[in-house]
Amino acid sequence: MIATIIPDVRNHYPVLLNEIISIIAPQYGGTFIDCTFGQGGYTKKILNFEKTKVIALDRDLESLKKAEEIQKKYENRFLFKNIKFSELDNLKLKKENIKGVIFDLGYSYTQIKDPQKGLSFETIGELNMKMGINDFSAKEVINVLEKKELAQIFKYFGDEKDSNRIAHNIVEDRATREITTEELVRIIESSKRKKKRKTHSATKVFQALRIFVNKEISELIHGLINAAKVVKKDGIIAVVTFHSLEDKIVKYFFKSLSENKSVSRYMPKGEEKINLFKSLNKKPIVPSEKEIQENPPSRSAKLRYVIKKEDFYDFETDIMDKFDHLIKIENLSKKL
Image (cartoon, one colour):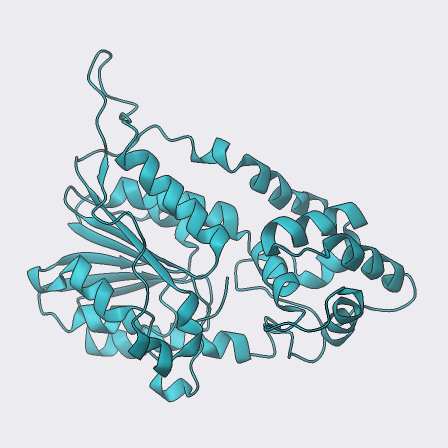
């Protein structure tokens, strides 16, 4: 996932904030789930409206510091949980009037610049990339998985055209030396066929490793499914993505339940299938020119949202089958 980066962390704001607020309409009250709390940008804006409550989730424990600041100001209207958003259905939400569930799938400036996390190819030292609540690091991926497996990760999670060459050279080099962040960047640069490019040569491989280490494919899929369960009728699910793989998953999930009639698993047999979601925009919402000028990395952001048409909890979806090939690659982590 590509980071929501800005030039000055003191001026941090989440991408497409005004558009999100316009869509979820917190001025009418209700409970909102901020699935990617981060620096708390969406949460703080929502809590400015008096009749709102926010349940914020983040797997990164570093977010707790910002959460504690907000907790002091909005003691009775804010709750923070250090969990993955795929687990949001485990929260006790039956009595909550969930009007909106929001996902911002970008990394924050502070996360990217944190040398302990090792998310950036500019980091010096040991490979990491763990965002919290992880089972393994990028170091284990690079040093344990076979050439073919590494190539699959780079190709399908990073759209890296030179995936085979890079994987081959990693396996060759790791036999004689430890692969650090700097060493991995060197291997990638020496493996690339085209030397002139707009983005850094290591961008796609590092994206792929971040996705793999944090199991972002299954996280997103389960997060979307569980968001659909907990949001109430007429509530909103809104997702900001930063690369094509994320957007493809979100687009398919929303479209399949908006245009292809589905059904609750507990609906009596013979009942007519209905579209569970209503989608008002076929194309994603993108940042304005003004926002892109103020925050250049926001240019890759895409916002999609749907409205829940009926009250249902469990339902049929084929999204796991649709992206089974990606989940199988993710499951290579069982070897670590």
